[in-house]
Image 1 (cartoon, rainbow, N blue to C red):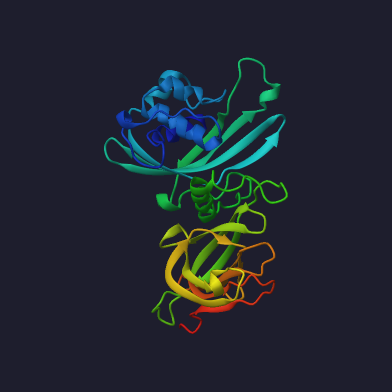
Image 2 (image 1 turned 60 degrees about the vertical axis):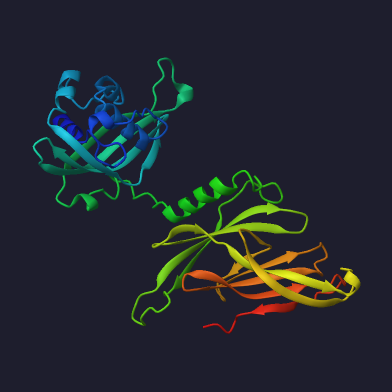
Length: 349
């Protein structure tokens, strides 16, 4: 068993991030913060021919009978591609065990390619009960065997009797990363009321591209609404969408630029005219929400707390995007809610 584990490990020698690399090009990675990066760190060491460091990532069960045999086992390996599956974990007796499904495509120096698949188990001992010398996460055991399927399909669904871990929502992860990068310092750090920021509201929308044939399948678009900030009477939100063609992108919302004329040039007087003199885009919507029944995002920007003066936009989802279809303005500070529609594109196909 140990010999089989070692042979597979030897082939798994030149992969750090899933791309084939030469030993001289391998970056230095020494990260023991989770199970996957320990595996990456192991092969960073091997790629750089830092075999003592590689040997140290293993626990008491080593991948070869001794260190010299471990080093010699990499003589015939040229390059390796690697894929990993979802990591599952179990706790027992002061330790956490992590199971990492793995598939590799190894290319030997003579050009021969081999695909292996299996699992690695890593162990993390509770730091609070350890005594010197401290032990970080380490590889406890593992076995890779020749696979009969192509490399792209070779990653096991799970390891041992463990059920497959929940699949990661890649689109949600990308949207959260984009939001944090752009608005991490700009938006509030907590929800109204003091609760920590939660997950964004998420929706799944189906649509066909413009001009698509009747027998073509619908495509899915994901919508993500992130709370941004809360002022006295207006709450702002940022929206992202995802589809399999464009990936994650932030929505920008068109809104008209208005020229509002008041009697005697007094904003508290009678409204004489509301003219649209141009358009602009907004990266945030105020007091907004998505209605799945009508496939619309609506906003209501209160110009003052009582809400008698305001502007409201309606954005309809069609052909994979949101378009402005209606804009209403209540420009009179008269204590009454009486908006006027200044744009109406609801008749568009």
